[in-house]
Amino acid sequence: MREGLSRGWRVLATGLSFTVFGVGGLLLRVVVFPVLNVFVRERRKRVAAARGVIRVVFRAFVWMMQALGVLRYEIVGAQRLERNGLLILANHPTLIDAVFLMALVKDADCVVKGRLWNNPFTRGSVRAAGYINNDAGIGLVNDCIASLRSGNNLIIFPEGTRSEHDGLIALKRGAANIAVRGMRDVTPVVIRCDPVTLGKGEKWWRVPPRAAHFRIDVGEDIPIGRFIGDGATDAIAARRLTGYLQHYFTKELNTMLEQEVKEMIIDVLQLEDVRPDDIDTDAPLFGEGLGLDSIDALELGVALQKRYGISLSAEAEDTRRHFASVRALASLIEMSKSNKRS
Image (tube, rainbow, N blue to C red):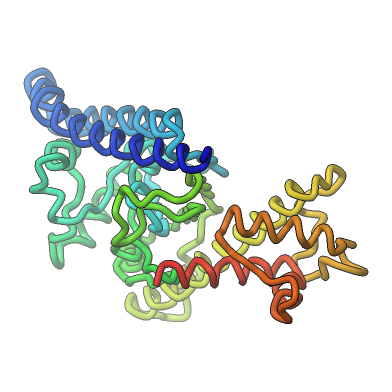
């Protein structure tokens, strides 16, 4: 009953959050930005002020969603975003990824879908902030490079839309073309949401069984120089970079899930003297490895059911294979998520 009440509250809280977002967008459009137009005459300063307002509003919105119990979040490497002229490329699992990044990044510019320019709830903000319309055609890459050269931090989701239901990363080459032609290193941001919510095609009221936990990892810069050598044309360099980024995001997401499994094992089994780094991803969990026993297996099975909705039979031969190692358990969880999304 408690879980049902919690889920019901989060449906209401999510609806309230979306209502606040929409009303806030309208207020910015009809009240705040017209005042900026009157008192800040120079366009460059007016755009900078509008972006500052949006950053503050989005920070407040994220805080509100956390306070309401809709989500929790952690940010790793945020200090790497405290620079200018960054080309920030991120994966895109949920509807509110852009909100998180715009709340984090100062002097942020971004590429937005053309339909947002005419949406009554968002057009005031995207136009006042001078964001880049992705309907710009062949001029899009040049507009992005110009933004970077002026000192803005440019946020792009290379997938072009939210990630597919199977969780696989499929990048387009547009972002890589900007990096190559603009001679700009890439600052990668890996976003993970567990359980997945507000994914592609999902209705807002279909909240997960527990509050979504966002983890945002800002990685070390990826030097562009390694992709443009050997006399490579821009097209070849962009293809190389896209392939590298595809592998990078896929690997990082898998690593984050394995870390999550390790933390679950420590938490559920109360292994007070064990840290996640002490657990070898490929080492056996039972016997000569971590040394777990059948009682531990039962407790982990309950945790898998509660956290991920995975039911395993103690008698099934596959169960032993799934519990063989952290990597095997992570693969089971990912497979279960993919089946639920399809």
